[in-house]
Image 1 (cartoon, rainbow, N blue to C red):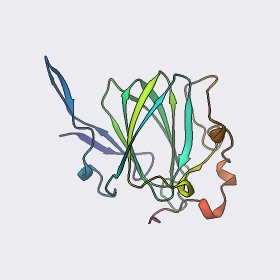
Image 2: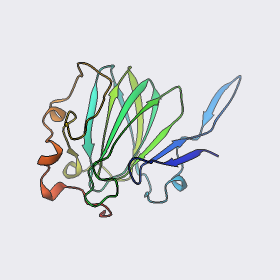
Image 3: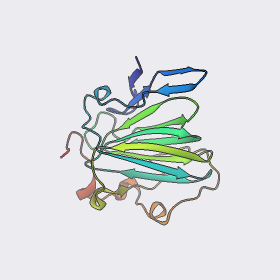
Length: 183
């Protein structure tokens, strides 16, 4: 059985350490199972992100979409920040490393900002429970002092989009996540 642990830092975030099985032919890992996430919905889209060492992606968030992340190759420093008003962990920041050599998955609920730094070249495989919706692609500044993230990089490579995300205190009311609100 995999080790499935709710985060003790951010409510509704779940860390999964699945079982790996191997022999002289190679290895097998069941990376995701819907039943591991009682608050989750069915994942309907799978994505693959390849980034070079030194890149930062995020911080992004969605009002209506959950993610499940799994690093297949390389190492990522993941940063999560609870933006959900009314959440018991509103304002909490969680940092953890995902590594292709150590099987670990991460369930991220709607309203929790998420990003990662590529500490090495990496391949991130992730599932989402909603199809791409540009109106639900939101962001918060990766370097916001209120979030106080340690990305593990000195001079990161960022997209133009991620350089322009507002600070947490500047998120407009219409796109501020509210705990328990999801459609």
